[in-house]
Every structure is written in structure tokens, then in C-alpha cells.
Image (spheres, protein in one colour):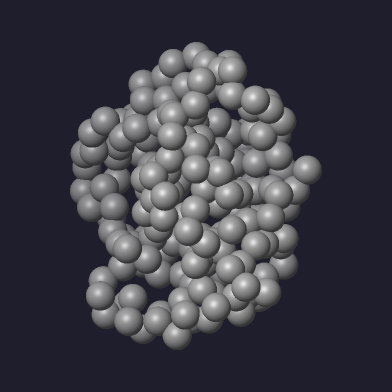
Amino acid sequence: MILPIYIYGQSVLRKPTEEIDKDYEGLKQLIADMYETLRSSEGVGLAAPQVGLPIRIAVIDLDVVSDESPEFKGYFKTLINPYIEESAGETVTYEEGCLSFPGIHEKINRPDRVRVTWYDEDFGFHDEWFEGFPARVVQHELDHLDGKCFIERMSPLRRQMNKSRLNSLAAGKVKCDYKFKAVRK
Ligand code: NI
């Protein structure tokens, strides 16, 4: 089932999330719904707060860009209770967007490599390094799980320049092709 995506202004995007265990009710269905929602909105990552749930889970689908980047064919990651343990490499700048901020794209600085621990959908434990584009996406999604959005990583100037657009989103003036839930409609 395709879930509506919560747009900037919704308080759930600011809430810290809670860890879940394997008995979380409807977990398999939620994961399937998150992948379906992500695919239908043509994004590469989706965190639970973006579908209104303050829990610690995110999904990543890089398979969607595998036409241009064949190395990502079949690249899906279900991250349950994930944490960034350490980062390394250079700080790199890359343009990011977010399904909760339709129409806003900004260059954001992040480290090029991160070590992440998480549980997969069968609750197998993982401890791995991510590098390059996957590291970028993981860091963006894990920010969501800490109640943080990418606008908080923009320079004050760039944030100022996006102010009217942000105010519009928070006021429920949203234009996008996917199902969404804004504060007021
Ligand atoms: Ni996002």
C-alpha cells in the first residue's frame, strides 16, 4: 500500500524515534509499504517519520538509479535501529532533495564514508562501511531518525534563500506527484 508522505511542518519529522524489536506489529507489511511508497515517489530513501511513524527504521532503494549506475542494480537496504558509529574520508558536497520537502534541492556537506550498525528485516545484525552515494543516502535517512532534516545542514544563507518555499510547505501549499500529508490542505 502506498502511504502518504509527511511534508515539512508535520511535527513527526522533528520527533526523536524509538527503537523497535522483531515483535513490532505489522513490521513486514510496513517495510513492504515503505518500499512501495518510495518507488512510487521516485526517491532513493525513506525514513519512518516521513510516513508518520516515530520509529527507528528506514529503507533505501538505489536500484531505481541502476539505469545510469549499473553497480546499484538490486541495491536495497532495510535499516532497523541503525546508528552511525564513525565517519571518515573527506567532506563532500552533493545536491540533496527530500520527499518531505518537494521542490527544494540544496548542496549539503557530509563525510564521504560512514560506519553503520543496524538490523535487517530478519533481525540479522550488520556492521559495515558505506562510501560515496550510498553513504550520502544513509546519512540523510539517519538524520530523519534523529528528528533532523537536511535544511538544518544548509548554510544560514541558503536556508534564508529557501525561506518562502519552506513557509509555503509548512502552510500546506504543496505541489508534488505523490500522495502526501501536509499540515493543512
Ligand atoms: Ni529526506
